[in-house]
Image (cartoon, rainbow, N blue to C red; front, side, top):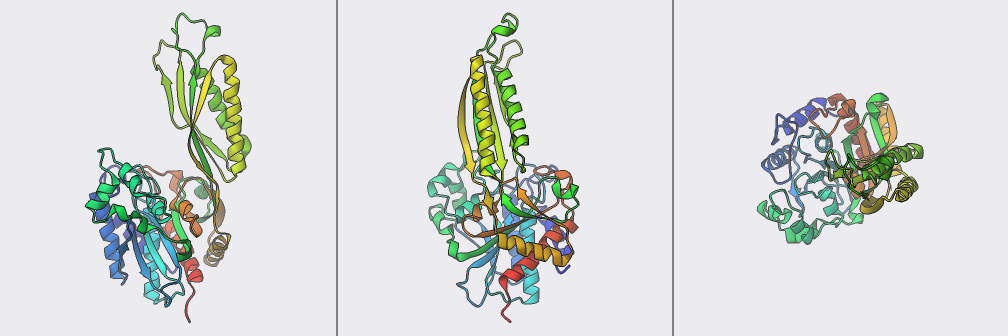
Length: 412
């Protein structure tokens, strides 16, 4: 391969040192000492290859290889370098190292592109500190306001606006981070799969053609709390029994929908929550994901019908909508370039959907987007056990490297 396995491994292992919890996976929150050290490392590595790093008004880090036409739209490559608490060392950083390795290789070759190539290391994608997930890309899409920055706060009540100011930015200028669609030719991201499919099917890379649509809502069921010893079974209004029926409906409806549709009950609370009281109230979340908006609606409709049926048992319900995102098709043109590049390298690939949200999902509102997955060992992610073999990571980077050269074009 043309990219350097040695460099890729070095950068991943060096970047992992900037960590608030070195004995418990990776914890690197935005505007903390660990994040500042990681940023300084990336800036230093860009300078070593002759690229001057710079930041936007949101705090994202960039670097460019210019084309002769500096006004041409950029090909942006990268990902995020923040983490969840006690996460792994590949979720996010693998995509940033992809961009750093490609920039290094292009500089070594003295590649002269027709379009500027832009390294991007985005912050607060996970929302680990301020609860503002996909922040860096949303800022570029013009979806972050000064008021948002005042409202995004960490567990100590410190706002993102305060921390931006503490780190040399003017939060009132956040709109200056906005990018125009005509200024970006493409956004290309590499990410670990965070699932078991590629490893189980012995595929080298996943070429994402869809990012799933997501709907998330909270269900509240109200029955009647009664004494567990004196209330006959046929006279109870047990909210937990009704909730159990709904949870089964969630699972069965997603399985029946097919096409990769999934549904999850991730939070579940029972009140009063005592061993000797019939449950009078239950709250739980439902998360539905599919590449088909119609299938998302179908699963949700089945759940609503099941809730209505429970009214026959005197169980009332409420639904509180939390999130809705349409399925997002990624660029067919970029996917086909990925296919060409993978074929040239002899890689086994699989076209697949992304069941998780990524910065690529937001950037698709601005430009053509490509997303490459590399295998996750045992499908583990967001935990210290998260692991991707360096050789597997290099295959993903090699695929994007070849694609960027095809898209960038050389002035020969």
